[in-house]
Length: 119
Image (cartoon, rainbow, N blue to C red):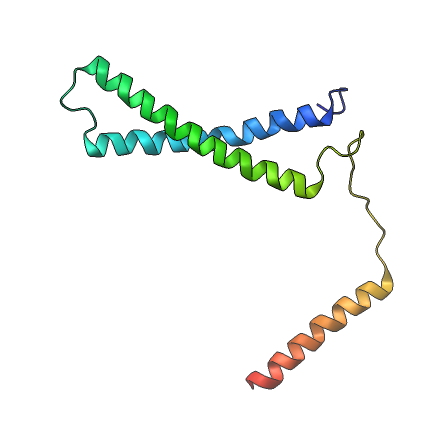
């Protein structure tokens, strides 16, 4: 979406909505199952039972959405989302020989120390 010219802030909002949809569906399923288990509204007619069930479902989904939105907003603030006009990307750096040597030496030293203490 960003490559098509849409501002990355709006594109990210669409992606968040798509990612959050399965969570909302799972929460709706949990609330519906809880109503079935508790025999919610058994003494009411079907119209009032469905009306009350939808009210409770709406409240549970709104509460879950607000908690999730607050968590995402805090995470986006901490990461500085939206501070720059253009989207930023990670830069790929070429492999560095001293880094590879240090990494393999660290692995070898760790394996050697573990073998020394466990044998």
